[in-house]
Image (cartoon, rainbow, N blue to C red; front, side, top):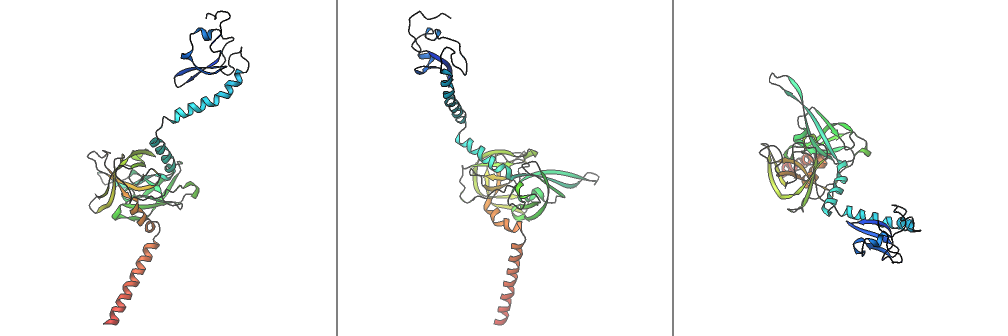
Length: 323
C-alpha cells in the first residue's frame, strides 16, 4: 500500500469496515461513509494501525467502544432482512401449523384379512384424526376405523396409545375414538364455523399421508356445498371442496383455516390414480359440531329416545281418551 502524501488531510479517517445489504461502509470519526463515496483509495490508505473486528483500528482510541455500540444496530438490520424474506401468508402458515400440530394424531389400524387360501393375517392401515376433548376423544373418518381389530394412536410427542371406538355416524362417515392418555398430553383443537367459508379462502390440511406423520399441505377452498357420494350408502351433504393435497392416510385429519380452527374433516378425494390431483373433500365442521355430543357420550341419544318414547306414549294416551 502507498501511504498518503505528508500533510494531506483525509476526507474520512476510517475505523473499520461494515457490510450492509451488499454495500461497503466505513465507520469514521465523522459518522458512516459509503466506500464508493470516498474520493480515492488513498483516502483510506493512510489510516494508522491495522484493522481488528471488535477493536477498530488499533491506532484509534475509543473506536472499539464505538463498534460495540453499533453492533446491535447491525444485528437488528440483519434480523429485519431475514424476517422480510417471509411473506405474511408464509408467517401465518407457519404460526398456524405450530399451533395445531400438537392436536393432530396418527392412527394405525390392524384388521384381520385372508389370503388366497383363506388363511388369516393382520393387515395394517393408517389414517389421521384430531383431538376434540381433554378426555381423550379423537375425531376421525369412520372408514379409517371401521371393522378394525386394533387401533393405535400416535400423539405429536411420539407416545403411542391403544384406542377404542366410542361412537360413529355412518351416514356422515364420522367416528370418535378414545384413548386413556393424561390430560396434559392432550391438546384439543377448536371447531370453527364452516358456514361463512368463501371460495378462494386459504386452508391447510394436516395429516398422515402414506404414513408420513404431521404432513402439512396448503390450498384454497375450491367450492362449498358439495354433495359427495362415498360408497353406495353414504352421501356427505354440504362437503367442502379443496385443492390442498389430500392423499391416502389424510382421511380423518383436520382442514384448518388461517385462524387455526378446524373447519372440516378430510374424508375423500376424486382421482383416477388414487393419489391427489387437487380435488379433495372435507366434512364441514357444522356437521361435526352437531354430531359430536352424541358420538362422545351415548347419553344425549339415550335421553332423546326416552323423550321420544314418552311423547309417543302421551300422544297414544290422549288419542285413546278422545276416542
